[in-house]
Length: 145
Image (cartoon, rainbow, N blue to C red; front, top):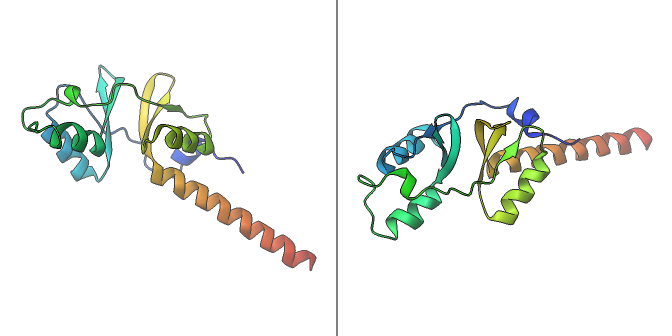
């Protein structure tokens, strides 16, 4: 059973939570807190131009003694963003996240941003798939015994 990103998104809310490059970091952090997410897509004219994570905040604002109340998102966002398409598998997402040491992946439909998936979304799906396989094997063993 191979799950695609599109199938994963059919089981959860599909919304892109985003800010613009000129949004102040303090306002972006408030959005993350209010929406209980660890990363935001950064969109300009509907196009993905970056991603802002809690990790970006701690490494580029806190450690560098910047002030979140006068720093725009464009100054700290990650611009070399790894993305996935709706047709990619959850296993491919895990490999991208693991190889690049990232916890969030924007999902694109063509070049249109759809949502951002997290490592938790991917892990939950993989665990559910493994549990399903185990259950099927247990039924097979019980029925043939």
